[in-house]
Image (cartoon, rainbow, N blue to C red):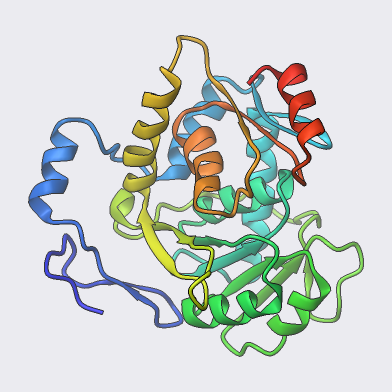
Length: 287
């Protein structure tokens, strides 16, 4: 792929050879930055700001309970250290296929802490999605929860690190809940800063196979966050959002990178959709 307009001299290139050209005209980006519409900070830096400013504020409410911003930040740094220990870094695409909940939230934020590019994609669709998305994205790492997906991952030669949330992983697969020995992990800024790709959004794939679109840190924390601010009216108190679609879907991207990283909101999720549980969550957590 080539781009008519680029901000960088060359497309962003992953360690495994995926190229992502920047298709935003330079003049447009400079105008948006001058108006303050595109924050000059990556998603993890924005999340860290909220966590350090309000460590005791509720960040995530899932089926297991509540995590404060301080607790969530500590978990993110632990998982980011696991990724780094496995050899993953800022020039990697890291795929995530997990149900809604803290593991999915922590893993995605850990990818941003690494300066890498996240590729969350929803459950369902069988192993076909795992095979095609990981192959076409040239992913260097993946976090999976399904044994069938793990079997497919073992066949992909470009994967250098495979993680799982299963309590007993197959040989060669690392557990995501493992403690990290040694010193604290130091977050890394992505190459090219806030203009670098942050997340690959995945379509439903109804036309044949899932499609991927790369969004930069600025596109998530600028454009998509502005959209949510306009919808929510953004009250003086930090907002509370209930996301009932998969966090790994395109609409679900309004959860982790927007609600948590960009807006400092409280994110309420449920692992599976159920109308009765959705109404109960509205009554209990007042989103």
